[in-house]
Length: 497
Image (cartoon, rainbow, N blue to C red):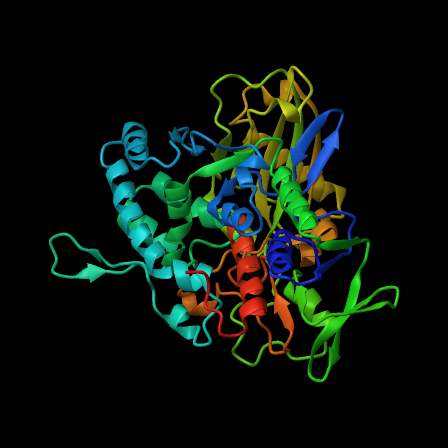
């Protein structure tokens, strides 16, 4: 197995339980992919994802790989509210976790009568989209006739009042404009795809499943940080006798008799294998083999394209977290169009203030007594000149400015801060330019589908965020289950029932 990201760990544990000897080669010195931790002066920070949607994926992994459930290995808690949203006009609204009635009431109270009802009606349509796409997009290997998923928009049509016709939104932006009819509701909706660097103006309407997942299954936190989830999965792998070799860079996939037969390491060592599973980005995987992995038309998204990355600002603050603070606050960009234009086509102008997520966990294990650790993140162009001190300084300044709207007296409390740029993510995960893999989405002519887990080279499989079903912690876990199923049961595997 190439790489020790979360998708690879999920596949490794399942394959080991099925009787396979599994060896994981990881070029860095640790496991977990993007789930990293930074520590300094008694402060601890998650540098990757900070919250967990759809924990059932990881609960299923622990059930299928041993008697110890997930909750016996980590302290998993539901956060409430799920998020607090701060809009450019000064409006603030906390959204209760996994409560439709609570969300409707909160939106009506803050944004005006009718806002909650429109959002609630949208969630009903989003659930229909989820029901139509969940299995083919998340629980099954990518269909050979994947164009069925690419061409048909699963988001339902909406009746037009006073007219005997319906109108079907094709993009997430159209849902906000036609159905939500409030700039703040539209910004709330669009923030769910923007978190992955996806432009809501071109994202298919089927992306409605992302806010639905958060609403239906809640948002969860692992005490000690999500790095603890990576630790628990890694320890489950060890308990199932998965072997790990750290500091071992794979430089090639060995082929024999027309199939993958092992890997070659940087020191010249060759490790033979019946199957090879790669948890790496498309550019790196192409460099590991001369074999054609996908026929023309098989790859939907351009694997050579550079997607947005994520800038993460770590804040060490003096003084305790005030009571009743939301775990997560989303501070929306003052100029959303300017943000999107800069994100998808970087120009010469300075980085504008982006939409920012501020995480303030109620977790005393993350900081010295009487202090607070805060993580501020935003999606940014991955190919900016991050080696420039001016670029780094500008990014830190705009993130601090936005975070100040979520944390009272931020600058007065600031002990120190550290900015982690996309090139740091590239060093840790190997993802080209530190790009963020988005989740797979239906429709949109297939531009938001990812390469299948099986490749055209027999015996070589793809796992993790750069393969089906795409990025995000739930999706990574699902990719591990799919790859394990394909190896154990063969090409006829159609997913768990």
